[in-house]
Image (cartoon, rainbow, N blue to C red):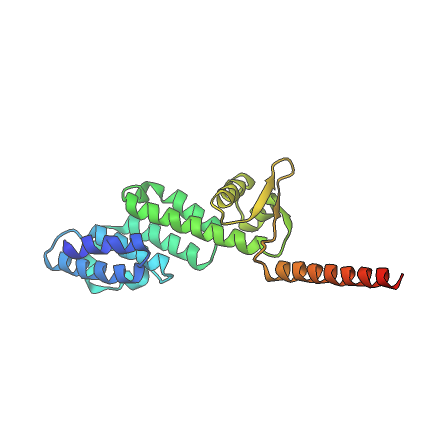
Length: 212
């Protein structure tokens, strides 16, 4: 189906809204032809999850009804994931992925997009939690995310290597020290003030020498 082939490209580019419209069109075609549109249904539910819309909006579609009946396990899995995303709970998201993994593994494209979504949400949470601190214990971050310290430390290492986070990790104490970037306005202002002060000190020194 041309609509389905075209629509698969859009999630890869991150355009889930456009992709959803193509998947709806594709599913309409499968329904009219009395063919299995399960793949379009799964991708449409994925688009709704990632754009923060309830799965019920898919289930309520008239063209989705024949496919929903044969995909109860998928509908339940995506509902659980959508609820975890809506509640902004990484713990619930992780639990939903784990408990429905057997079902999700039957469509590796959808599963990979969900794992990417989880990874993105985890990264955003960690960056938000780290922002107020110059250093913070990794176990404290893990407690706030309700994840294991090992998992959080692994993600932080990845973020540092990918230069998404300017930091160092002291493995002995499980403490993350956030380095202030030179692009930080406060850092730049402080450096400018110090340089100006150096100029004032030099001027006063020269004046004192001339008086002598």
